[in-house]
Amino acid sequence: MTAVPSPRPEPAGPSRTGRTSLAAALLSGALGAAVALLATRQQWSEGVATVAGGAFPLTATGSDVTGVPAALAVVGLAALVAVFAVRRAGRLAVAAVLALSGAGTVAAALLGASDSAALDEKAARASGDASATVGALSHTAWPYVAAVGGLLLLVAGLLALRFGRLWPAMSGRYERGGAPRPRRAAAPADPDRPEELWKALDRGEDPTGA
Image (tube, rainbow, N blue to C red):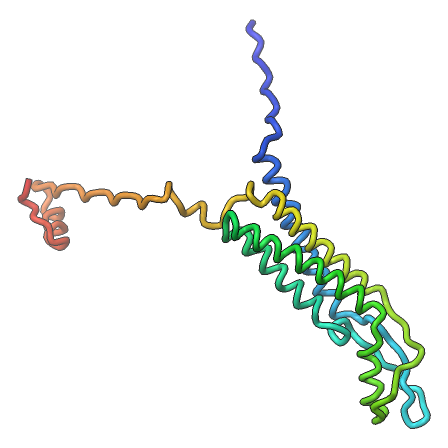
């Protein structure tokens, strides 16, 4: 009895590397944008303002502190999608935008982690005193969560810069060697079938021609 040779394992080539890096970039970028957007809607800081001799609690969300992380997260998400619509130099440029969006999100989130300007502005409005500031200031962990989201976007951008040349383009499935496919010529009408003759006449053809 002849032994059947076992199939050889598929070599780890550029195609496998491209698929792995593509999946990692998509997951990292989408998750990073979602985390950053979610974190900016949460409470980042809280404090107390003195109003009419009493304590008035104040809170500030991430969007109150800074709108940069949310804006850059949207830009990064758009760049992640646009990576597949361009090629070569355009893909590198979009990947750079994705990476820079992530880096900017991290920087803005970390700067906002200790910011008190948003609560000071609220304290001034609540007390009617433009020089009023907030007291008993404290911060939550949400700015650092937004920074993690930015870091994931940065990772996606770096993956796109490094392996983007191996990824497929969005328009690739619609192309056939760059040339339009020739139209199939209509079959000649069968003279033994009257309905075929009428169809040929409707198309403007001569059913009696050779």
